[in-house]
Image (cartoon, rainbow, N blue to C red; front, top):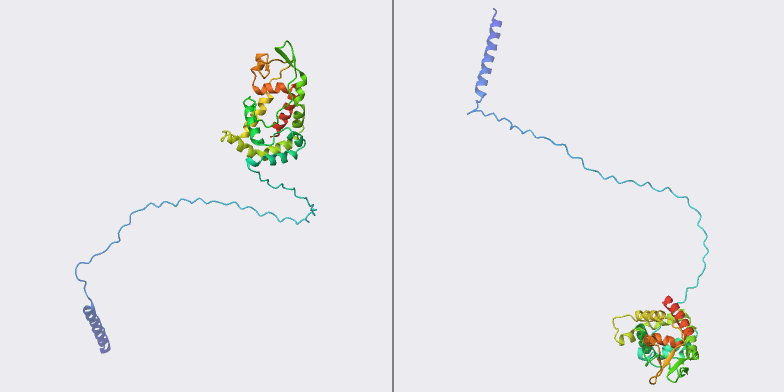
Amino acid sequence: MSKVGIWSIAAIAVCTFLYLVYLAVAFEAPSGTTTVILPTPVAEVEITPPRPVPTRITPVVPAAPASVEEEPEVVEVVEVEAPEIEAAIDLPRLNDSDSFVAEKLKELSSGASLLSFLVDEQLIRRTVVLIENISRGQYPQTALPYKPVTEEMQVSSVDGRLFTMEASSYKRFDAAIAAFVALDTDQAVGLYKLLSPLLQQAYAEIGFRDAEFEQSLRKAIDAVLSAPEVEGPFQLVKPSVMYLYADTRLEELADMNKQLIRLGPENSARLKAKLREFKAAL
């Protein structure tokens, strides 16, 4: 072998030796026990798929198609007169109401004629008392709202103790009944409505504070309308000043029924017909 080859092998050996020495010096061995950390096993979890959330669907209303513009109609404006509204009327006090009632009665058809048969004081109070009595079948002898009839009953004597009522006696009431029947029913009801507060006040004064006067009025009308029709001739007796019916069945009738007999059948029928109209218009 030549010298060059020998020197090359020697150089390689020296380099290898030096490299091994470097590794020995630089290497640092681990101290203590080596611990290997394994990852923590994860428990197997069952995954539930999420529940679907209901979705509210709002219906979409399609837009209305555009309307074709039409020419507006020409409307003729007609002027209408507004109805006249009657102003409220202030009622007087009950104590001062007579002149007011008289003036209002004069405004009614046949009102002035009827007024001539009525008293001119405490007219509201006396009317209420009369109607309340009639509603119970009674008929007061005093404090009446109309003037007393001055003509006496016409009778004919049978034997000096027994008398017969003459048909001419009915005529005493003809003019008053005619004036009452001639009243315009609607006007009369209107006046009644106007005077209702005063009538109610007078009704409370005689002890009916918790009752309606109109109920008493309706009962009074019904009492007259239900009164029996009694045909004459009627025989009378006069044990004292006043005549009494000789027939005890007639004498035992309610005072209001006996008063209707004195009016006579024609006047009684006309009165009932007017009261039916008045009741229907209430």
